[in-house]
Image (cartoon, rainbow, N blue to C red; front, side, top):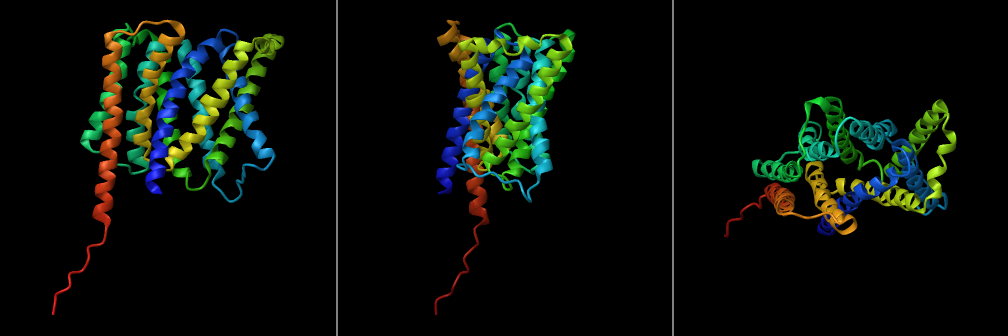
Length: 320
């Protein structure tokens, strides 16, 4: 039974990488019709509305009584609030290539934070595999002409803080998985995200006298489709599955899967936008895949060795 749970967790981890990889495309489409804050508002409106249906009908049971709600609120402050706010303003002061390079360091940051707060340990080979996956992403962006420019220091700092926000979310979500169900955490996070981004967006429109522009994106079927994908698939589904994953495997092992989204975004760009795939794309993708497989294979090998070592030693009986 435990083995089936691990298989499902790894399946969800790959699925999340695929979903996030396509989310870059849908985000570009949505931002062509609405500003960043309006896009985030509609994104979380869709996710909160969809999840409210089974909650309202009692199909999904939600209860926060006697549970560490303050920690859950801190979780929501890290993701989605902190992560997306820092990302939006970070990309206003930096390039998307810089964002991709910095986001690739999320597994490294997660590994460090998880070792401090969750006492998770990784072997030297696992650390090397994590760095291999990071190098694969960085290699692709550098070969595309991307680099970090000190003139964009404000954006670089904000984008690096998104790594801290996501790493903090991964670590805290793993510790809260024993108190909350995936649905309870996800519903709280989606609700808070919707409320805060809605208030922020409407306040900005009122201040600038553009309140009429708030509903304008809904005239586009393309925007609605993008918002539904970003809200329901890329936010709600990934949050539900991430919470389940973190209840089964270590935060440092899950975080390395985020770099697979780079491979998916390359494939999505080739199929949907007609972008070219070059030799360096293949090399970088192979490095990423090798790093992800190596990190988790070594992790399972370490877990089996630990479980075997923990087994009680049978007492020897002498024959009479």
